[in-house]
Amino acid sequence: MASAPPVLENVPGGGFRAPESGRRYPGLTRRLKRAFFPRYKYNSAHRRTAPKRARTGGGGRNYGLWLGRKVHKQIERLTRDGPTGLRKRNDAMQMHTKRAICAMRRWGWRALKAEVPAFCDKMGVATRADLLVRTADGGVAVVEWKTGYEGYWETGVNPMSGPLARRFSDSPLNQSLMQLLFTVMMLQRTYGFPITEAYVANVKDGGVWRYPIPHEMWAAREALEGHFVGATARRRRAARP
Image (cartoon, rainbow, N blue to C red):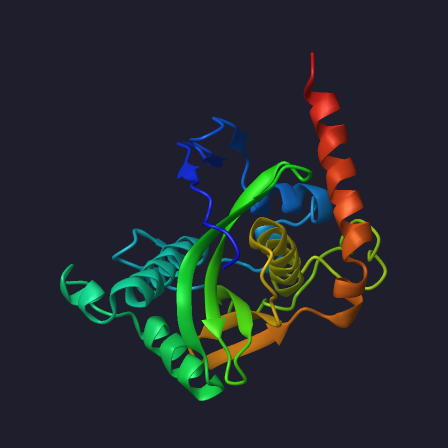
């Protein structure tokens, strides 16, 4: 990396704080939803028909959120500490984690660093990239892991807001691709190193599928950023007394 990684602390209730400057940053994902997918409702895209899971005390979305956090944490520990990272914590590896690791081997990816912090003062937000990997041809790729979304991953309810409203719906897939796009832009500004590829990797019971950022979305990144900054500013003005 071209520069030392910034230090970002989690803030209770959401968001991040930069200790050196004391500045607080809201998280990227929630702001993206407000700017591009304001009308999306989970129940509109997927009825909660998944069976209850006793270990989480809930079914459907609750289980998906729990599993997603679990897989993210296990991939982070494996990247940082290797297999001992889970054994030391007596943390049984989730099947979705195993599927993700097998997919990385199949695609020729080698994990470099997980949960990489990045922020952008212009956008006024911060985030953490799920994983950076070395690709088979020696490049660096950003990976955004998503788990579950069985049966409604590509189901949109409304057009997304902004410059590409006529081209993309508010499906979970498109929301994830937009998150990945902004994460890549923020990483490039924070560190300055070249990112050659970027993928959303969706881990399901039947396997793992990867999705690159669509060319049309990447080509419109400046217009999308402008819409995001403008929508965030309008929301702040409206919230003032």
